[in-house]
Length: 298
Image (cartoon, rainbow, N blue to C red; front, side, top):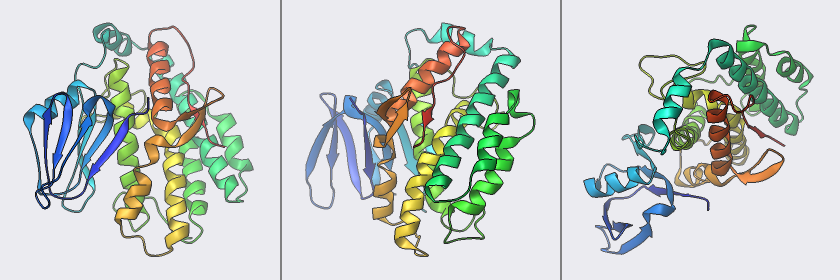
């Protein structure tokens, strides 16, 4: 079953009863309930939301990715379960013991797939991509020639044709705001499934930052970024220069977990595909397989 993404953008009281999330509106007094086991991602985006400790504990026990937003309506925090897999200790050890050559090979696969997916999205926009296909095929172990950066320069220069001078910067001009929001949702999905697969989201295969608790999530989400980019591209094409983050735009971005993707020659919702990706990564760390399963953009 596809886990649901819940978004709360108005004042609310959130609590739990009988394994249900209970929502009460202070404005209308209306009560609504939803089984906690059906929730995959919960986003709180209002300064007047009150949530009970009992509900937080149950959400985390059910491996819900719990995102909070700041007063500018951008995701600012992520809570995850610390005990997401019955074989967690053994899987932690396999991840910790992973050799440098293995990590470099896994990063090679990751970068190659990311560039291919970026190329497909550009191709769908009728942009020539022969150079990107070549870069994807030429990625070496650990991406020692930094083809990821070369591809990124070409990709961002050509993706948003309404914004020929666009630069991908976290604090840059729109549509950077939309990309940030979409990537935050994607990151939460990936981190949630890393924990569910028994791994530490902190220990990356490429990203290393003592201040980043989600280095592995930032690694594994890379080939999935073009799916977020495709949603943002559609929003840009529909709205032109009017790209303040509106409720309708958020609604579009909140559909990212349910997007159909192709992985291992099968169609799956993105959230399910991420589960397959993280499960395959755990097997790579354990020596049971040598390739991560990633989606192929079409």
